[in-house]
Amino acid sequence: MSSENSRKIKDAFTLHLPLVIVLALCTVATVIEYGRAQEGVGRAWAYTFQWPIIGLFAIVIWNRYRKHGSLTRWFTDRYRNRIAAFTAEAEAVEAAKEPEPIDPDEQAWAEYVADLRRRDEQGR
Image (tube, rainbow, N blue to C red; front, side, top):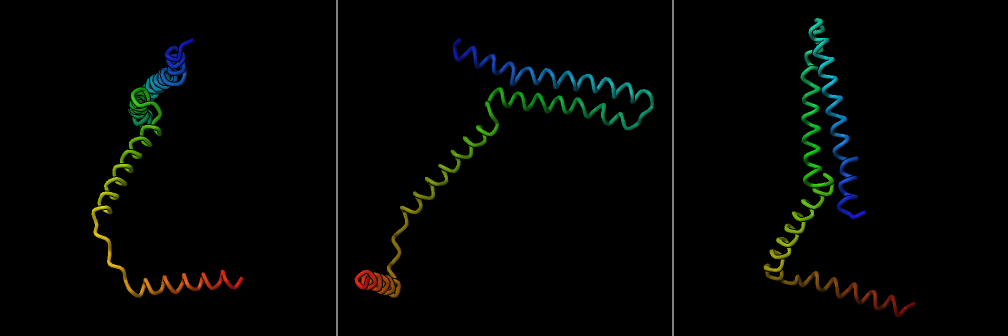
């Protein structure tokens, strides 16, 4: 079986079938809640509009998965690209900077620490 056929089968079971099931449940729930609202249950009106909104949300999520694959992969790729761009920009700015003048006190301290380490190594 080719990879294209296996991908289509996987999409059918993991993407399209769940959408059909969710939309069927939302439709049934909407009809039930509409019937309850017609019977005089005031709270059922909210649910009558809630279930179609949930169905629309499912369609939006399904469309996102269909176009981009995994949502986390899409977000990860997008932000990795942004981080790479920011890093390249920061490196370019850092490379364009002039080197800071060496502080004589800091240089003296570094020499002192290096001398202490040399002495410590010799004393062992």
